[in-house]
Image (tube, rainbow, N blue to C red; front, side):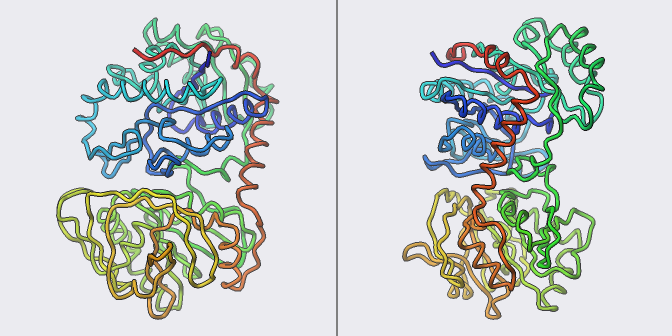
Length: 488
């Protein structure tokens, strides 16, 4: 019978996604058929699955760590925030519209059947399912109707290990405090804890580790030292975004929009030695020495156009173009480059039309049907093939589309300005194509240094697995896993 184990956290960004990816790779290397599962996720960094839907990017990485293709059952409920109070609700890979946070609370119990079906189907294909929680079970004000943490764990009978983050401080209070606010049934479902992101000598925390065990009544499964290469793996949360480690001569700048999405498009460039990648946060100007400015994807194109202007980035962009700099807009960033973005039906927010940046002679209209597809394209300037994906609403038309960025079969894709320095495309993941990335860098006068980005990710996943094997009681963790039952 398939078994399951759940990793929950004392808060967001404690490293749950990376821990689950590492544990999946450990299981795979031990010959265990393993699959990742996250009942409910909140992220604008999505991946297109083999079965034509979308899931959180973290679950796609965990699928890779498990040696599996990503499928929608790995993340049956995905929330994609487009405002501070609302989000697009994606169920089984397809959008079911927008809801305000207060309204979503009312439908969560109805989604348990969808979650249960996905969990049952996924478990039928594996010997072990490693489940990732969301946020923290200590948010007991959200416990009613919960499908993300203890609500799911108890309904499905899945044992839980609680992960705390010592890097942010207060890890003793994180774990013991979680124990203090949970009811007796939820506490009984938690079978142990682990401490993540320790910097320095873990032995210095021996007394703290013992205190957690004493005050919580839960056994510990280890202290995981800081894994420095985690930042080179695709991130789930925009809060994890940072500039690249390289200091190469070609300076690429990316704007950190308020609803930035699919930002892992940039990851392959960050590891190139000839590239210096700078992520520009709100309130900071564009560096004057930028060679290329990337406008990334966004969950709210019109909202982020207003956000961009509020930072003064539009003025910086125009100055960058006057200096001869290049601009690449990807998905929502492509839409921003045109003359206007119209949303007559209010698909992304309030109905209306917003003026674009006017750097491309195109315009965009939002439409209800969302494009979700994996594609093979040819980048016309280099002639290189690209395996990519499209995930967007909106149709973009105009004179500059007669100079397409790429071609998909007989279809033109994207647009390029007459000067060739302003480019827009709906293709995500294009820099992950090794041949294209190398040819593109050579076209910029640079020498590519990473021949296989996918191999780099695999190497990091193996290193992560080694790291967890060295510092966690893996045998004890896997022994916790219990037989799967359908959530009730």
